[in-house]
Image (tube, rainbow, N blue to C red):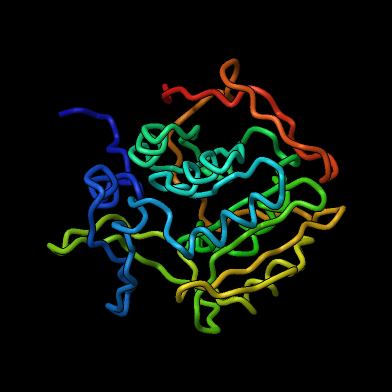
Length: 271
């Protein structure tokens, strides 16, 4: 009998999500302790950007700066930005999602947003789409982290819940057969709750809009971000991954103070 401890299962990695991303098909849900399920629209995430996505992408084009897609999933937004001439980098903890993003031609890192990332404090824009405001189950910590990543004047474009909610949940990912993964902390926020949690991080609402039934909020980083918070329960990472070096340069236009130009976002596989 081996004396080695068993590695705990990791959400978004050791659960049905990885298989669904590989196949490009759902259905999947987040199931809460009360039995209520929230749909995860894997089929849409694995398809090309839709009309609501385009409302996000068009705002990124107007920014004129590189964009960080936090929780990029299978990479449709990263690929869409590149097709529009906007340099972009995806970040996701799921190896299958990063692999799929790279398969679309998009650079991506298998890493948690709470780990060290390229260009910290120099990104002109950041995306939190598809419910990714829930990452870590602590919106205040997540929004402080996004403020750290953005350049002064940088813009966060976040998808929010249609209802006026501000919930903390413990959930599991579940597939159509009832198979589920380990529990993890999550959050659901509407526009007003998001703006409230963003203000102490130095992020101020600049716009909100609805597109094809989905709801979005734009938050501008002030010249001096708030004090960074700590996630109540950090995401599982994919192990050590060195910062990119060499490879394709990603440049930006002038405008946002201190925005990247950072060089060398390399498309390579995690070790």
